[in-house]
Length: 181
Image: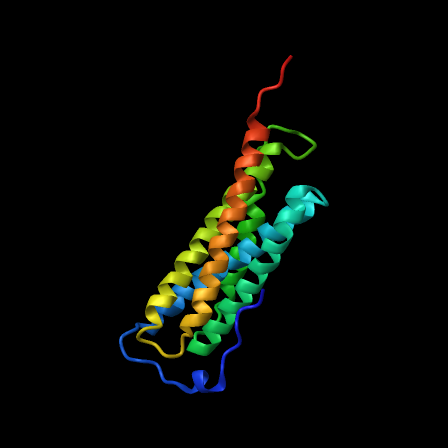
């Protein structure tokens, strides 16, 4: 599901005074760094899950997370907020560094790895939903922000939260179950 396109009239409306654009720029770039890490994490999780039920369930979520990152870039462009590449790189590097953790296994992937990846993804989606909510509130005072688009993005984030949480619970129960023996 793609976020709605902007109308030309919507793009021409001016900003309303009251928003500290420097702080908003920092805020949105921080979320872009998180979105970069989240996109990487979701894509990797789908790839490692392969054709399993988990991979099939998370494939559409990963695609939406990628679309949401693009939507954030579009919003930043509409607001005139420059992308800070060092923050994007930090998000990318942080996701890679997050993979370097002891997992109780020497050679193969631990079942806990999937649980931890899902927990990180859940936190990322919750953070994204919070950003959409913040921008939605700002849309009352800044006409460059499209409330309908933000409502769509927020609802999509809520659906992503449900899916990720459902699978996080399943994977945690499976990974932490004791075996007879």
